[in-house]
Structures are given as C-alpha cells and as structure tokens.
Length: 284
Image 1 (spheres, helix red, strand yellow):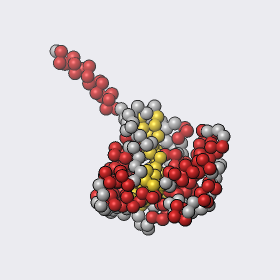
Image 2 (spheres, one colour):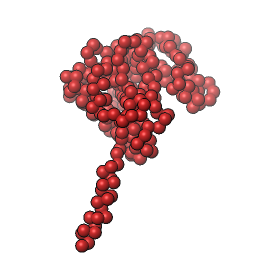
Image 3 (cartoon, one colour):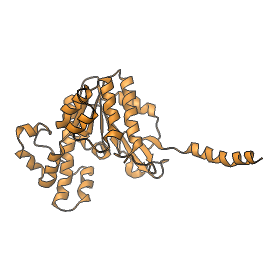
Image 4 (cartoon, helix red, strand yellow):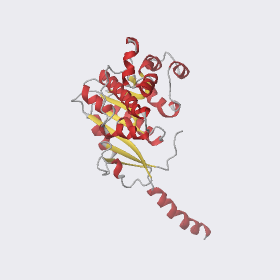
C-alpha cells in the first residue's frame, strides 16, 4: 500500500518534469519552428551566423550540432570561422588543425578565451577531425583597444604589416545603427562614443575575413556573440557591402524567464531564435 501511495505522489511530479523544456526554437515573428527547418534553411545559405550567449551551454551545444548536421547535409562543404580567434593567430590555429602542435602548444601560441576548453575546443576539434578550414576572423584585440581609446583615425598610424590583420582602411561607420546606438548609450563621454567604433572595427574585420574565405557551393558557419549579428546588423552590415548577393541566415540565442513566448524586444532579432530558460546554469 505504501508503494502504491508513493507512486501516486511521484508520478504527477515526473509528468510535470517531462513537460519542462530547456529551449524553444522560433522564427523572427516568434512562431515555433522545427530544428529540421532551421537546418534546411541553413544548408541553402552562403553564410550562417550563430549569435551565442558566451556562457550559455545550450548555445554551445547548438553550435556543434548545427555544424555536424550541416556537414552531413552539405557533404562536407562547410567552412568554419569564429570571433573567438584573432587573425594574427591563424597560423597557430592551422598548426593545431594539422596536428603540428597540441592543445598546450595552441594555448602558448594563440590568445585563447578562458572558456576555450569547455565551449570552443569541440568546434576546433571537429574541424581537425574532418579536415575543415577554421578561420580566425576577429581583429587582434590590441587594435580594437586602440580604437576605443583614440578613435578610428588612430588606425592610420599602423604599419602596413599591422594593417593586414584588420579590414582595409578606412573602415565605414554608421552611428545610426540601433545596435551601435545601444552601445553608445551604455557609456557617456568621449570613450562612450568610441565604444561602438571599437565594436564596428571588429565587425568590419570579421566581415572581411568571411568574405575572403567564402567559396561557391559552401556554407560558411560563423560563431560570434549575439550582439555582432543581431537584427542583421554588425558583421552582416559590413558583409553585405562586400557580398551583396550572399544568402545570409542568422540564428540568435536569447535568455528568458518564460520560454513559451518570445519577448517583444527580441522580435526580428534573427531568422531563427533559440529561446533558453534563464535558469540554465552558465558554462562559466
């Protein structure tokens, strides 16, 4: 009798737990869509941007799953690239991919993010296993810092050797883009005005890196923070200037208390939006 009573108590809790979801995929308008549709659309695109929340494990899980599934669907015709690797570290990345250095060697030669081991190593290792190109797309941080402190014009003083690590100068800048306006409002004063410019030079360099490495018939998958591709701005604004006919698909990860309905502020953030429960523990 006690066993029956225990089962009666536990079963409703189990059924409730089975209804709990960690994430939900919706389109730009907030309508629920399938992962299958996301992958199908991604395979038809020249470039796929995955805008992650850097410490979100669901975002990183989706990155590797989307990559694997696109690899299968495209018969290996994919190119990988990421914000998390800077252009002057490309040689170190290539040496790791070809087995000339190990993880320790990569850590010595490249400026890896603190969460590389937990969140990005699996992507690099997949590229290594499948012999895929992995492009270090971002500007070396010292040059973005230079813009933050002294403005875009400070890049003119760089040597020709240094300039090869960034997008060709002069870098266009549209201060009216909503994402840059948001960033500008985060900090008052002179450096506040330079903050979105530092973001812009990152976006321009990543777009330039992608454009340089695109191939007909291939899908370039780019991993970046959500701010860099949200609302089809950031990197995409610059990429469209270089590749106006490119078919671009965006995926953004957002965090909400209630995943049943997309918050209005996230409408049109991306072509596909992955809503994650905000109670999801961070990877760091």
